[in-house]
Amino acid sequence: MSFASDARRTSLTAFALLALTLAGCQSLDAPSFNDPSVENLTSAPDRAAIAGAAIGLVQSERGNWEGGFIAGLGVFGREAYNLRPEEPRTITNALVGPLLSTYHNFWDAPYALIRNGFTLVHAADAATTLSSAEQSATKGFAQTFMAQAYWEAITMHDPLAMPIDVDRDPAGDLAPLVASADSYQHVLDLLDEAAQNLQSGGNSFPFTLPPGFAGFDTPSTFLMVNRAIKVRVLKYMGRWSDVMSTLPATFMDASADFQMGPYFDYTTQSGDAVNPLAQARGSNYFAHPRLWRDAQLRSDGSRDLRAQRNLTSVSPYTLDNITVTEEFNNYIGLSDPVPFITNVELLLIKAEAEYGLGQTSQAIQDLNVVRTQDGGLDPIPDPYSGDLLKEILYEKRYSLMFKGGFTYLDARQYDRMGDNPDELPRARSFDKVFTRYPYTDDECDARGMNSDPGCQPVPGS
Image (cartoon, rainbow, N blue to C red):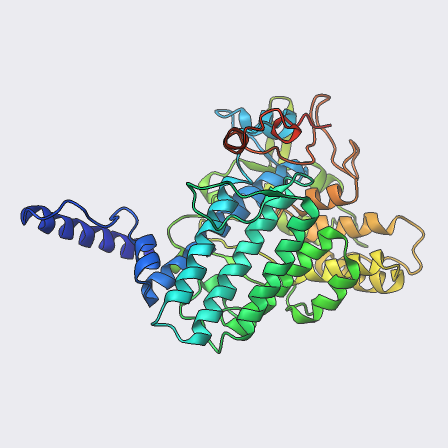
């Protein structure tokens, strides 16, 4: 039975109980029938409530990832255009700006997930129906997704100070703002705490994960996902030695399927929604023209296999002086899954870390594994006389195309956000690229800091 069916059944039960209460002329004081899962978790957590809350974290992160990092940063990073004639803000907000504090993509949703994660952690501690190992497994699972949500909010507001200590009464004092460096360290510490809980989590979770997490659905195998997320966080911090020491604990495997990894899916347990990026849904996301135009040629003169697989030609379409000629093949059907973190991302991060450590020969060797097998391109020579970082970023752009905003994040990390074909080209003279988001209006109002630079519009460049 789907979770949507369970929710409808719970609502009907709640309605029946309310009717009996009223018919008996009893007190009108009643539990919160609008949110029975929260009440169950805070007062009498049972296995069903724990399971529902855990899957709720997966569904929440699915929305954050697909809507924010794939779709939103896909536009920021000149991978995609969201061309909707009935909604001009998909162009003006993301490409022209200024970026306003009313735009909440990377604030409300991550902090809502974190709040729900804390609720699940406390519920696991209080759940007498769970064994000690199951309590640890549940907490490690929740903390992993919480750390991911913290990172999403922190990295998209960097270098602004961020609220971290948010496990408090919403009616009480606001969480203090913590410097960016300390915020990132909090993410790493939380991931490590989650890892310890997963290591103590026994052989199984007290809930069943969606099919997209097949192969990563026990505490020990999900631990590899936790470590992979840590590698991603360390990569964007430029901590290359730590990246290399953490990679062996992930699922990275140069001999395995490059697309191996956990996915967010839209079937069975996650069947409450369809893939919003799917062509079958009438998605308005088109490929940036440079993805086909700049794809390198194979020895037979055809383009990079990744461009051939992930792009398809459409009739030229122009909106507001932006013309597109391709759309994505990544997501065709309504139930097509969305990757969260994959083997090929980890392999490319390894090459990037080796480059960062000055191990250029090893970086070239690992880069060529992806380049030749995933792209069908000739290997680059060693030694390489060109810009090796440019080649690494090219491989990432094509192997991770429209799968997580990595082109934008990489360009920002290396200060390669210029208006040129190799970086983040502007289609029009007034187009901008933004390095961060401002705080939200609500946060600025609540803290009385509307004049703070973090509360001002971000003009872009």
